[in-house]
Length: 448
Image 1 (cartoon, rainbow, N blue to C red):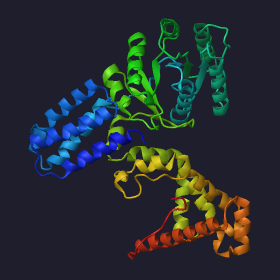
Image 2 (cartoon, helix red, strand yellow):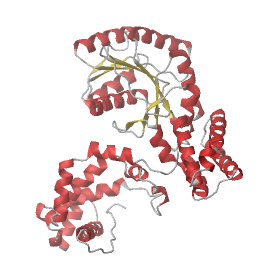
Image 3 (cartoon, rainbow, N blue to C red):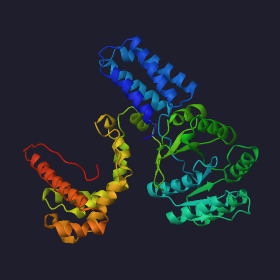
Image 4 (tube, rainbow, N blue to C red):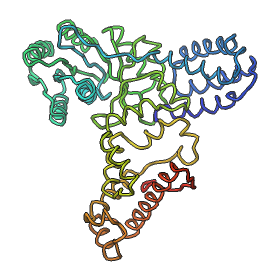
């Protein structure tokens, strides 16, 4: 997860104060020293850190903490609230124009992932908000960008408006808006030119496109891995264009994450979305409070629930529950479940959303091997219908055939059958538990 180093440092610091029955100024001072070091190490802007520490310290030695029944927990509450505030307080919603289409201008430097993010955002608008977006290729200096947007459009089955690279971006924007009105697109996403650095020519052109298209939103796409540079770029673009939001990409990378904590304070521009991977659905609305929770090890159950609601078929869950009760759960059902969980995103990320997951022995550094999951799927798909329903009939020759068909080994086939058997036993115990027969449970998932 993003902010991993910062999260570890802050959680260790919070653990020292959590259970304290009394908290004095010396305790708060010691804790603030640790928090300050953790934030600076995570590449948070120095001035932002200074202001943050001052605000938390004032509240932590004030009446609300000193007179509370659990001062240690109250201090942590203060840190969480101030961290949330630092990242923008409440979630910033995307604009909706009274007179469609709503125009979003995507800006940023080359290499930040602007074109891909434009596609991801269009996908999110369609899937989550039921909108009909039009993608506009206005980066005429990089023919590869036009081609890239057209490819994304094909992958998403979404229209891309392009006039090639010989027409000015202003003219492209003008004709795209006319086209969108005629074809009843309610969102227009303009992918503008980027450079490797900020220059007058680039800014002049972006101002012209802004003047003509009168965008409802101007989103700056920045690479979270560039640290303080991301903050400087945001500051510069904001000064010249008046940004309405920032999209942070590569927040899943090996980044110290400080940029995310600094951008809002330095530019007073909300972080609207965060990119958490390569896939076209790997873009999420940014929730400051949920991110603060995750950084402090309190989990992010709301996002986990939303992911489940978006990717898990409720009818199938009911059906599955029934099968578990009647012990008619098959390897086909397991394969189906595996697919639904995989749709929710990388398993490490899902585990990271569970409160205190990082403290569970063995989970903290657990890498879920996606290749191993692929093996499990291949093994099940190499079985006959009867074998999936009755794994107990799978003898030595059948195992050889399944291993050969799935490109795996007999040992792996054996392991899966044993683990599936353990799983069924556990389900039986769980149904027995509801009848008051509690037993010890123990199982391993086939990919852990």
